[in-house]
Length: 388
Image (cartoon, rainbow, N blue to C red; front, side):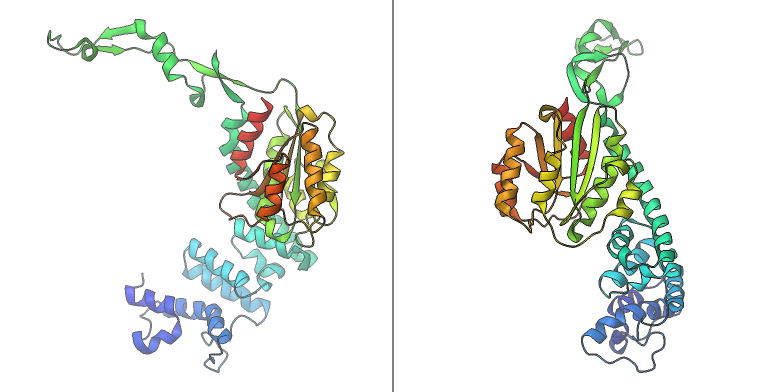
């Protein structure tokens, strides 16, 4: 365990040594490992390194992939997992060490997590076939975890909308009717046998309610399936929303009351409905980046509408239209007038701040498409609400 002075020395870097002194015993390797990466910050400001190019010199990780593997091993040995993830993220995002995800051996040593998944999807076009094979395993591992977590979060919602006018024989805690249960069991009020009856004690203090039958509300589910069209902008800024759209669509596609169509777009439109139940295949297919033609995508999705009154259209985009904003708004208005239920999502994510064109989004709202930023659980709640 490093002491407080050593912690400050690690945070401030090797140039704090003049005022704080050297690292204590056991912290030297940690300082050297951090200097290998964060010494680049000094170079960017024109500060010269120590000149020997060795560990701790700030010469950095521009050496061979085997050296990157060695450095990663050192980092993972010395620091806790959360710190390792931060260091890896800084190495890629701040210092551009794309070798971490384009070299298969180095990539295999990274900790699978959602941040790494976003980076892999962004850079997979630069990867060799061996690196892509490793990347696919990472994507599969992170997606499986996301599927488990998101399915658990939205499972109560997907059972249908609560019907407060009817009760069900199925006991589900989330559907408990406390008021109805108390009302139905008032006749089972009994004296506390463990306490003597005191004439000065109020009746409400001398009685207890015995629950002989608990009541649970029913949940309404659509009697007939709805068509749900999920249309996702695959521009680079939408990577988090692309991931959560793929996973959420796969979960919804497994429900009997939704018929899912999944469409992704940039300047072209790709219908991935055949893979909607396989988010791994969807994510390995999408090509992040490029231009954006939202109008073309909305126009294509309008051709998929068979029964407007039983169709929900979910457009996931930053509304930064590369084509005609006027035509986009016209397409949205046409779908709204046909009575398609619509929602525009500037973000389908948990914590990523949305960056979107507020002017075009406002015009789409005026044309009949509400715009929001939702989590997958929020989207599931909205779908159950509008289709029940």
